[in-house]
Length: 493
Ligand SMILES: Cc1ncc(COP(=O)(O)O)c(C=O)c1O
Image (cartoon, rainbow, N blue to C red; front, top):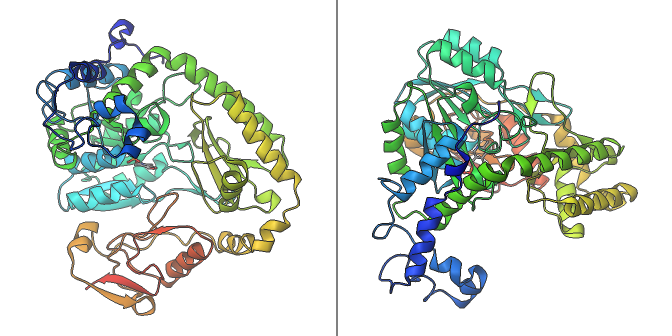
C-alpha cells in the first residue's frame, strides 16, 4: 500500500532548520561540547569535519529543545517522522537501534516475565534481557545449510511457543536480518494481535521498507506495536541515527519514554538528530524515485550475478520474503570463502563490503549508488572469477573455512540461568575443559554477523568451544571473550 502523508508538511525539516539558525546567530559559546563550535578543535578534526559541521556540533542549548522533553523543534521533527512512517509516535535515537531494542524490551518486560524471541537475534536484544530481567523463551530459526545463513523466525514456531507460554509479556522478532531475509510479518502481526501480546520488531535493516511496492512493507503497516529502524544503515542519516516507532495500545508509550530517558545520552548530538530529520525529509520527498532506481540497479546486478557461474546469490526463499537490494554473494563455487572475498575486494579493488561470513559477502545497495559503482563491482568480480585461485590455497585460508563449513553450526546451548541472573552472578575463570556443563558468564559473539553463539546463563559445551576455535583460526573476530586465546572462560559461580 502506498504511504499516505502530507507532502507539503514533509518539506519541513524543523530540527535541521533550528540548528542552522543557531549557527547563523554566531553566538560566543560557553557551552558543551568543549571545542566551542570548532574554535578549540584539533586542526585535524577541523579539517576532517569542516568549520560548518563543527559549528553545528552542539547539544541542548537555550531554545534548542531536548530529546528527553521535546516541546518544539524535536517534537515537530519526530511528529513528521511518525506521520511519514505511519506510527503514532516516533523517537529519534542517537545510539543506534541498539538503544531502541534495549528500550523496547525494558518497556515491555519485567523481571522473570517471559518473552518469546528468536535466539538468533542481535546482541542488543540480549542486553535488553539483562536490563529487564525477563525470562527468554527462545524460538529456533531455520538455517539455510547451503547458503550458510540463518533465516528469520517462522510464524509456526512462534505459535507453538505461544501455546506453551500464553503468559508471555511480549514477542520480539527480527525482520529483516542483515542478509535481507524477512519474517512473515503480516501473519506474525495478526498472530500477536490475536494473542493480545505486544509485538516488538527489530527492523534495523529496513528503514526503507514500504517506500516502493517492490520492497517489503514495514512491520508498522501490519500493526506491529514497536518498530526500531537504523536510519543510518540504509538512509542518509549519520552513523548511530535511528528511530523507534510506536503504535497500538498494548505497550504504554510512557514506558518507552522512561526507558529511553535511561538509555539515551543527556547530551545528544544535534548533528545526528538533524541528519535524522533530513533523512526522513529526503525519503518522503524523493524516496519513491530514489529507491525505484536502486531497486532497478539491484535487479540488473542480480541478473548479472546469476549469469556468472562462479558466484551464488542468496535469493528469496519459499517461506520468507527478502529485500532485493541486499546482495549476498558466495564465491564458494570458485573455492573462495566469504572472508577471503571481502578481503580481496577491499585490498585489491578498493571495494568494501558491509560484512562477510564463512560463505558470503553482504553488499548494501542504496540510492547513493549509481551505475559506476556497480560497474566497478562487476569488473572486480569478473577479474576474481577469471583468475586461478592458487593464491588463496597458498595462503591456506580456504581449507580451514571449508572445515568449519563442514562442521556445521553447533546449535544454541541450553539456558540454565536468565541472562540477568548470569550477569549479576559472581563469576570465576576456569579452563574451558573444566567449564563444560556450567553456566557461561560471557556474551560471546562472532562478529559478523553479531548473533551471540553463547549468552550469559547458557550451558557451556565442548562443541561450542571447538566451533569458536575454528572460527578464530579462520579470522572471524570473536567479541566478548574474557580470554581471547580461548583457554579460559568466565562461568557463573
Ligand atoms: C539485526 C540488527 N539489529 C540491531 C542492530 C543494531 O543496530 P545499530 O547499529 O543501529 O545500533 C544491528 C546492527 O548491525 C542488527 O544487525
